[in-house]
Amino acid sequence: MYDDKTTRTIVHFRRLLLFSGAFNIVLAAPLIPPSVYEWYLEFLWKVNSLLGLGGVRPLPLTEGIYALFVNTAGIDLVLIGAIVLYSAFDPVKRIAIPALNAGGRTLFAGIVVYYCVSRDVMGLILVIGIIDVLISCGFMYFIVKLKWGRLPIGVNLDRAD
Image 1 (cartoon, one colour):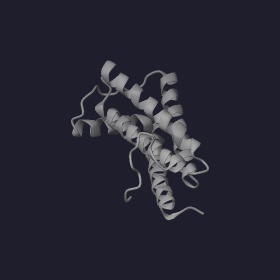
Image 2: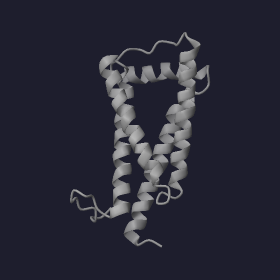
Image 3: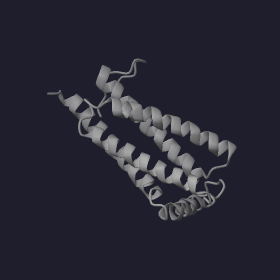
């Protein structure tokens, strides 16, 4: 159906989609259960401290509505991860999913930078935001390569993968 170069591109794109979906699910699933997310935030803080990434320790949520928002965010992120995994099964036909996801990840990273600067959120969250930007760049690279075979700025994509 596709030539060898396009097939290799699709395989690499699929791998990035699988990583991205799993990344979402693994990082967000512990936010879903009401009693687990507090332990998880404490775990993230310990990792943050071990890596010396700075920021302010997250406080346990005392208001039920804020805890509900954390749990709901976990559900949403896991569902987004599942949708990205679904797109990996046919990335050419489902190319809109990673395109939209790249936009969402980039927006998330921008919001992370805002909170890291204005509220001194733990640095580990900034690392996650940077990973999201890298994933977004990878998505856009593969989307452009599959749609046009080259980047519009003249970068040669025909070199060996």
